[in-house]
Amino acid sequence: MEKVTIPILKSGDNLITSPQIALHDKLAVQFKTDILQKIIETKAKGLVLDVSAIDVVDSFLVRQIGEIATAANIMGAKVVVVGLQPTVAMTLVEMGFSLRGIHTARDLEKGFEILQKIGRR
Amino acid sequence: MLEENTQESIIEATALVEEETQELTRELSTLLEHNASEVRSQWIKEMQGQGLLAALSPREIEEQSKAIYDACLLCLKTGSYEAAKKYAASMARKAVLPTMTVDQIIAGLLILRDVYGRFIFEWYQKNPIKWRNVNSIYEPVARKILNIVASAFVSERESVIKQQQEAVKLSTPLVGAWDGIVMAPLIGIFDSARAKQFTETVLEHISRTKTEVIVIDISGIAAIDTKAASHILRTIQATKLMGSDVAITGIRPDVAATLVTLGVDLSGIVTRSTLREGLEYAYGKLGLKVVKT
Image 1: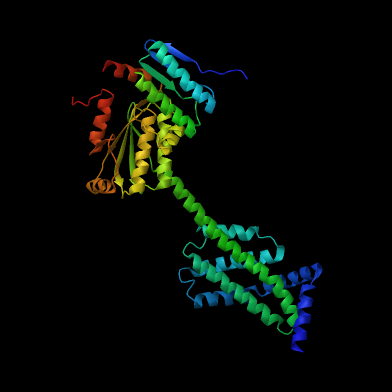
Image 2 (image 1 turned 30 degrees about the vertical axis):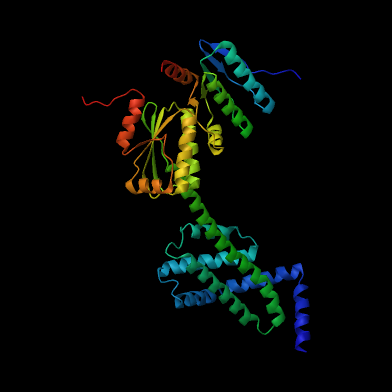
């Protein structure tokens, strides 16, 4: 089977990534590793994770997203999750997803605004 | 001897063939048609005796009793209950007999059933076997008619309940206060169904429009319990996840006391005493300011 990777783009000090396909367990773990690797390589200060294309989440994926944020934070990159779908937002709340260390924004643009604001502090 | 007789009549009754049934049905309906005025006046008399028709004018009594009598007769004659169903539905909608209550109508129909039954008995009492056979035709029709009427009332009630549930949906309006600012006044009782619907409406609205701040005013909520509080908190958390800011306003003293007693954690959530201050906060978030010109 061909190996699928999710592109992680660099823009200034920030990374942008937007998974457009369903993140099954294996891919989610791979995705997490890729992001953390990329943060090291690029010395990025921020990461915008656009999840607008994801309309179903399970507990595993929720945990992976949480881990991405926590790990990125430790490595000095602020994480902004943008474009959460209503159903996904509800699921996250039901699962008791903690907002600590994670910023959320409506769309990519707002996400960058937040990163800039944090960076200036 | 008596036992044997009964046995025989049962066999006869069950052995009633199709043609005989049709023949008897015709006979019975002709009989009830010819004696309509007699049976009907007996029916009205008995209903009046029980005070069921007190709220009706003589003309109404005349017209409606005739309509019901004819509808029942039509069911017997044709075996088609469409007319009865229609009439029952209009009764349930209060289009006809608006002054009569459900139990009055049902009681009236039960009396009609008894009047018919007694009339049939008196007519056929010389011939018990025929009486039995006629009864086996008449009784299912009477049962079915009563069933139709009762169902009509139940389904009418159900549709009213449904309409009210729809109305509840509309009772959670989202009011745009400014570009990017939405007010959500909560009024009445905030139960699970309502909370779920509220959360969905709010989240859908946020994802559809560019809502930056949402001000939830809970001054109109009758009472708050742990469940309602946790529903509101969840809505707020989900809203924040979607990147909008939330402020709660209009927490009444008793509600505030309840929240504290319940141990609801409102830390990290913006609360303001009045809607005015909530809006002020929202404007501030967008860098707007209300000034007097």
